[in-house]
Image 1 (cartoon, rainbow, N blue to C red):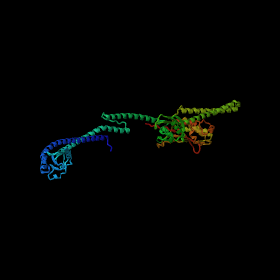
Image 2 (image 1 turned 60 degrees about the horizontal axis):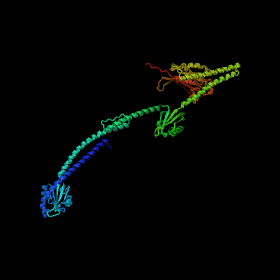
Image 3 (image 1 turned 135 degrees about the vertical axis):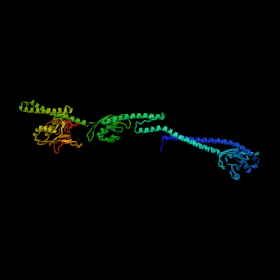
Image 4 (image 1 turned 90 degrees about the horizontal axis):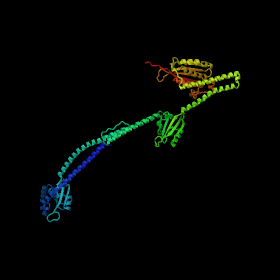
Length: 611
């Protein structure tokens, strides 16, 4: 189990205090013990001299020093007077008399020659020792001296006085109890003070630790509050300042990152960032759509493994190797997209930082428009050159002499007039188409009924159909909702579609005009949201390859047959721009088994809600 710093500080302080108290107790007891020994030694010195004086009569009579009742009685009397244990020991260690031993047990007392105080006395004439008595079991301070007779050089006996330390031991035991109580109280007070002191120190540190954890989780609004002005308070203030600076930096980085992501996300160009080893660091949504990959699949992987395009791989390898900006254009299969790539290098030398930035421009539409422009210029040139060449040829023929033949000149002039009318028609259609595209033509937004438009247009176009024996059929639903549109423009749309159907349908064909409402399937309601107008023929039809391009200017499915049948090649382009200008859509479908079906869908007039 891991202890908190609070308990570490508290327990450490308590251990130091406990060690100090124990050392103080040991030193106090030792000091008292030494003091008591010194005092007791002084007392023993005096008492030993008195007892030695009392034993002088026995020293003058050597036979009296044997173990006799008189000697034992004298020793007890001297012991009572001296308040100490008195022992008389022979030089060989035998105990001759002992005030603490009864007469009958005196013979059983062990030899005292090995006693430390006796050995010292034998060696130097005087010896002291403190040990537990074998006879009484009490801790006793002993003082032994050698006593000699009047005419003896060597000690006749050894006198040993023992001062029991019983009273002192009781006082020491009492002192131990008192010290234990005092130290216990002091320890309890120290525990309380240590815990409080540790809390006062560690509480700010704990708050700082909690604040640091909150910071690690991203909570930058946390603040450390402390009233102390010491190092802990300084640390708290520093962390608060660091938090403020960190929040400011993160806000700035988040704002920069949001702006960068917004730019990358909103860009129509694809962007890819690579490191020095060619691994993908970042791509934007536009590039995901271009290559049909996700950011998760691309990030961290080599560019060659993600996109698998040899030309792109060569460009990346060249840029990373030479550190020179490069450009290239690639073609994607099978989508057919054309992408122009601008590869730029950065100054970063680190392994995982951006080393190259590639910007992908989708040139597909631009290239398509360039092709359309070229085709348009070529078609316009061809369409204008054809009548001009014819006019020039017949004029030259007239100048060469054909003018002299009235019949031939009249025929040539009639052809020149027709070619001039065709040239004028082409120019009129071009001007009209240009005005529609540039917004110079203002379409009316008036409620009108499709049925009247169909009837008027069919009446106008019927003579042309009768010339080729075509049958015109009309299927218009009753009570069709009104559409918002321009009646003249809608008649122009329908007449162009019918004119094409008549031209490209073999004789005695059938041309059908139909109109019906379109319901909103999402709401499952019976209210019509649009009206669909269709022109269906039984003619040559349009191939799947040509169908997407029939509304382009001067585009012809069968160029030779189209010029043979006449027309400028701009009719369907004008139809498309008029329908879209009225808020509708136009497209063409195959009419199985033969022919084509052109469909125009126009929104109906929305009824106003009366409040």
